[in-house]
Image (cartoon, rainbow, N blue to C red; front, top):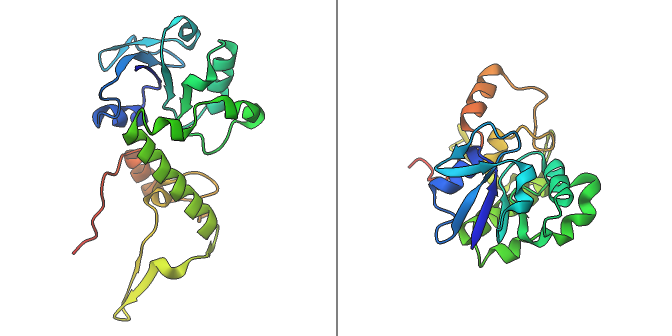
Amino acid sequence: MRILIWGTGKLVASYMKFEYFDGHEIIGFVDTYKAINSYMGYKVFRPQEIANISFDLLIIGIAQSNVEILETCIKEKLALNKVFFVRFFNGFGELQKYADSLMNVETLNNIIPLLYVEIKEKMASELYMRSNFHKYELKDSSMIKTIGGTHIIAWFPVELLFSERTEDNIMDSYPSAWLRQNKIWEDHPIESFEPYK
C-alpha cells in the first residue's frame, strides 16, 4: 500500500522508529509549513501538492490542527475514505459532518495493525479517564491502595501525568519543573511499564 504521512514531528518519528508502516511503501511526508525538503530520507510535500500525488492512504500524524487539515483535504478534493486522522478524539468542529467519510479505525486493523492497537488503547484510556476522573474529583478509588499504613500507591493512566489538555488537568497551574519535564517527555512512546519490585 502506498502511504503518504502528514506530519514530521515526534508522533510520526515514533511510528517510523518502531516500524509501524513496515511492509508498505512510504511515498513521502506532508508538512504544513514545509520547513524541510526531506524527512528520514523521503521527500516532503506541501499540502497544496497532495492532490497530484497517487496514494492509497494518507495518515494524519499530527496531534493538533485537525480542522485545518481536514479543510485542506476537502479543498484539495481528496477521497476522504483514504484519509485517517491518528488523533481524532477531539473531533473536527464545524466539519464534523465529514467525519463519517473518513477512514475509520476498524479499517486500519488489517492495514497497519500496530497503529490500530495503539489507537484502540488510547481510545479506551480516554474513555476511562473521562468516565472516572473529573477535575478535583476521583470517581474510581479502586486504583489507590494503602500499604502498611505509611504508603499509598496509585495506578493511573500515564497520559494523565503529562497531559496539558484542560479536561485532563486536575491542578489549576503547574510548577515550572513539571513544565520542563513534560516538554522532555511529551509524545514519548511508552512501550511497557513494569512496577518497581
